[in-house]
Image (cartoon, rainbow, N blue to C red):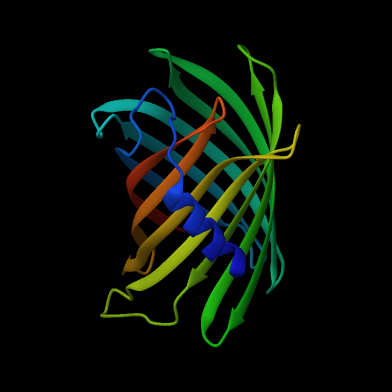
Length: 216
């Protein structure tokens, strides 16, 4: 828990430059998820995400992600995924192949639901050297569900570490709400402060994000 507050404080002080956009750029991200239950312990997940930068005027990022998640017990989920990424660089979309494995620790404290997701990514490129990256996302869901839509606030912090040299390359701080539209349709709206390092400089992006999940 202490790490979250330290990183939040540091992120608010850092100034950076990412992509070709100005520091403090406003962006919109939209994510669509589907989950298909295989049995009580396992499910298949599909995800598609779109991102617009330069004050939400420039479409610069798109990914597809497919995975399999196995619930070992009530405290641990294990997953293996493959992600296809298309990101605009110097005006041209470049492709990245990104298999990743995940281990998510889940526990509850005084009604607060805590998730600690650990991810290892292998990033394959045709235009630059391949890399390995570690990501840790720590999320807290508050114990309140408001109105018939079960509106539930949450906060999260995610760090990105380049495994070649152990450097911190990105930090994301989330604040949002999740809600239930129907039994099989869930949604989220969130604000995200992203700080990314490039050429020894940092740049911030302010993101308004939406998510829609279909559960089968």
